[in-house]
Amino acid sequence: MKLHVITLPYNVHGKGRGGASGPAALLDAGLLDGLAETGFTVAGVTDVALTAEEEEQYGGWNRVALGNAHLCQAVSGVAEDEASFILGLLADCNGVLGVLGGLQQAEDPRRPKRVGLVYVDAHGDYNTPETSPSGMLGGMPVAVAAGKALTNLRLASGIKVPLQSPDIILAGMRDLDPPERKMIEDDGLVIIREHDMIEESTAFHEAMEYLSDREDVIYVHVDLDILDPAVAPAAGLPSPGGLTGEQLGKALAAMLRYPKVRALACVSYNSDADRTGQTMEEVSKAIKMGLEALRGREAASL
Ligand SMILES: [Mn+2]
Image (cartoon, helix red, strand yellow):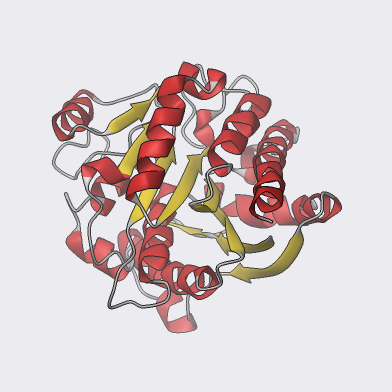
C-alpha cells in the first residue's frame, strides 16, 4: 500500500495558525517515521500551498475556496493510482470539500466518480448560512458538499456533482444546533452513533456496507473534536464527551477495512494549544491504529 500524505495548512485565518498548525506539527513529530516502521511505503508528502498572488487575496472564505482548489488537484493526482491511499492532514473541516472534489474528478473529470463520505465529527457541520447560529464556515461544509449552500465554494473545490443524502454518513456526533438537527432529519442522513462506533455494532457495519455497495470510492473524514476534550483538549471545537484516541483508532481501523475507503483525513489538531503534547499523542495513536487496518486489507487482496 502506497501511502500519500497531503497537508492543507490554511484556514479562514490564514496559514499555520490554530488548526492550521497541526499538519506540520504531526509530521515534525515523526508521524511518518512511525508509519514506516509498521511496513508502509510512504510514497510522498504534498503540502498544498496557495500561490503568492492568492496569498494576498482578501477574505477568509475566498482563501478556503482557493486552498480547496489546490487540494482537489493534489488528491485527484494521487487517487488515479489504484494502489494509493491518501492520508490528509488538514487545518479544519472545510478541507472535506477539496478531498471530495479530488476523489470525484480522479481519472476522468468528465465522468465524476460516486464518492461516499463518512463524516466523523462531534458536530454535524450541516448548517447553511441561513441556519447557522454562529455563522462559522467550519459548521457548514457537509451542507456545502450536499449542494445546500455556497455553490461557488463547492464548484471551486471540484465537487461538480453534489453528494446526495445517502452518500453521507454522520458518525459520532454529539453536539447539534436545533435547525441543523431538523435538516439532518428531514434529509434522512445516515447516522452512526458514538456507541455504534465504539462497539462496531451491526448498525455500524450495515451503514458501511450500504455505502460500499453504493459508491465507487469512500472518504473517511475525521474532525479530531470527536475525541473527548478531557484526553485531547487541543482538538477542534471542544464538546464534552467523546472518544479516547484508542477508541477512535479502533473505529477507524474498522472503517478502513472496507476496501472502497481510499482516503482518511484528520483535521483540526491545534498544535499551538497543545502545551503538554497530550493531544498529539492521542491523535497519533488514532491515526496509526486506523492505518494498521490497511495492512490486513492488502493481505486479503493478494
Ligand atoms: Mn467539524
